[in-house]
Length: 113
Length: 114
Image (cartoon, rainbow over all chains, first blue to last red; front, side, top):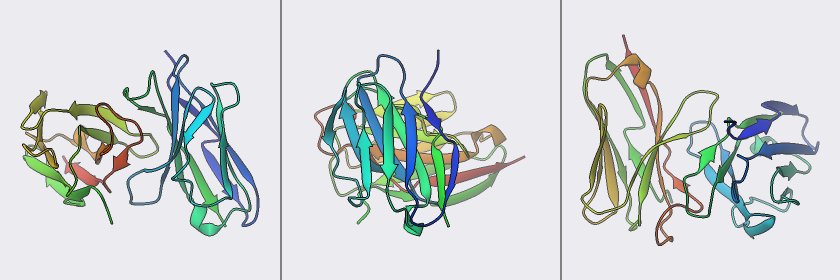
């Protein structure tokens, strides 16, 4: 069966550009999570959804970061006016239910020049 | 402040050697998880430990959860080059069970040389 997929896998942006990162969770998975992983670090929580409801966005580093999951399936993480410090791997994970095992996608590697 | 401290940060060993990596915290966790991450991929769950003092074995990997549920260790016996990767511990200190949003350690980057 298909796992979590993310696109694009790599994104190079000029400072100040807006970017949109897509996550396709495993079909039927209710919970969806976004994490940011800087080079040499472990992933850090950004936000999570249960179906279409964004239950926690406490990890979003600034108001330039916005996530949505309008139909409770695909999710998009948008970063406006990208800065160099936004360069990282953005990981998406989904789980069948809240509290269940999280399955991670391969990540989108974002490089802001 | 890092909620989960992992050590060592880097480890390079020869095939056949044994090794232990540690995950420590000042907070109590209802459960801790160990993940392995390879370059260009997302973390893959290896095991979840839930009960204080619990020991779980997965082939050559042995996982232990501390009695106070504040620390965990991963021991690999007779390491092989295929064990190379980034080992991450993670948990949610606020949940009653299972994982919601996870807090990760910085990871231990293991290299096993043939």
